[in-house]
Image (cartoon, rainbow, N blue to C red; front, side):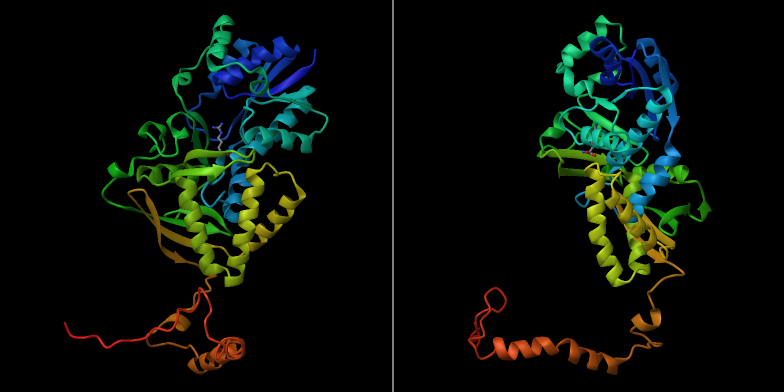
Length: 419
Ligand code: ARG
């Protein structure tokens, strides 16, 4: 009998898929559930459910550390925010799960892998493309994309086969979460004019009822990686978990956006990512202190490419390898501490310091101790303005002097008459 390794979340779709893969394709199903720090899941009961429904084996992997080290932190160092906002929690998890599926398929001697993505989203692309890159010989089956059952038919299918229907089925929202963030879609959110109902949020307090006193948090980075909070060094998972809690308490981390999916659809997405939002802000602030102007500008361009590449499922590409090498190299001086203030939904950077800081007080100050060379400034300005002066003399002045959109027509003044 041929075998398939199915990425199993324990939800209705993938539970039904266990039976369906057997019935439709005669495949033996091994399930794989990756723990990426989604804090709502009882992994042991997920494993039992898989076996009860008919999986021949149920694998559970704690992949939190790999996720943070190889996916989350590099994306943080890159400054990767899709379309300027989304910290990519879901998108970063997909290539890792694909890799785990492929590894498990090899271990189990499977000929196929399967995932529970619909035919409309980005996730199917990320899985399929990643598996094709890692193991082109493996077949990818996407039951939900294929079976064309309505929600009601699916529940009926489950009932007939004694497949437990999780309570979350009543929820109109589609949620994906891991320790880097929570992605929420569907239901009332499909109307971009509708404010997200409070029930969609689980990690963040409504800023209206967040504490009336701000919280200050000091985040220390070592070469672009957060290593301590308020002077206390801690493991990455704990650091992110703690930041999710404290920032979430203050209502920080809600993102409400219309984003461009790879498959051509605009989609209204709501995210909760308290730690990711706070860390990106802090990290960026530290870069403003420790990177040169040119590096900051160039890195912003790279960051956008990197975010697109991750979002579009090209994790296992050589372009990514090259960008990753640049990102890692760019971080060698990004060490120091940033103080953020969390208050009523806002995360504001209010302090930053670094031994590698390029901020030079003696150069910047307007007070005593100023070492800036004012005479050099005069010379600099002369040369800086030289091409402009030359051009203006030849091409602008004395030629009507009007440059549409730049220069207003000559204003004639009238003496103001009193009263
Ligand atoms: N739009 C986001 C992305 O493509 C989130 C997807 C969320 N997935 C889900 N099954 N709810 O990365």
